[in-house]
Length: 194
Image 1 (cartoon, rainbow, N blue to C red):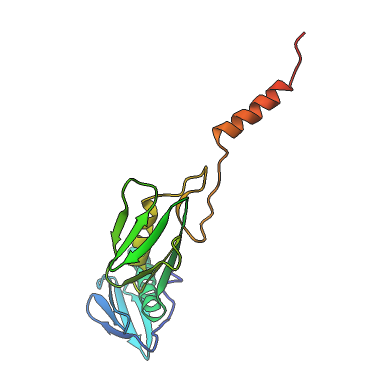
Image 2: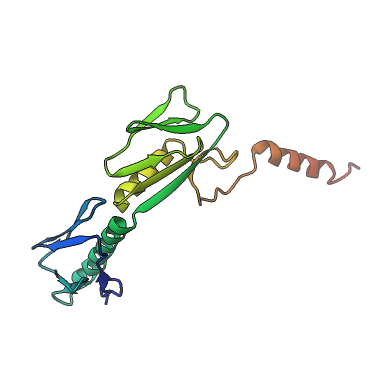
């Protein structure tokens, strides 16, 4: 039994929902989203502003899809009413970002600047040269764009330089020089010759 799938989903006031044979369409001032579902396994009902995802049988496959579709509908409702946000920070001497027109420009230690086209439906801003704010109503697009930007210069564990999520914790490693110095010092004071 899917606990997530059996939840009643309340439709926010600014979102219009249309249910057809195999899809649910959402419209709001922010934008439009569509969630597809297998109509042979599930039925979706909208009664008095509350959406219910109902299984047509007790098979495991229906149970799995019930939870997945309910999560996708929840993501659409939250995205169109409140929106999603990802914050990235840039660490490194001379590393910086800015937005010009429909492009996010990064100077992150390469011999050339890196530019990203901002997808439609996303708002990208750089409050400071080392911060990137990504906002949008589609959770998948927001997350994918943030992941692609981060992947251009992943944070490295020795100096902590790179692009990372604002709440990300980088586990730092001790460099070979520090390890060697510690071992040499410990070894020198360890024993005496006879």
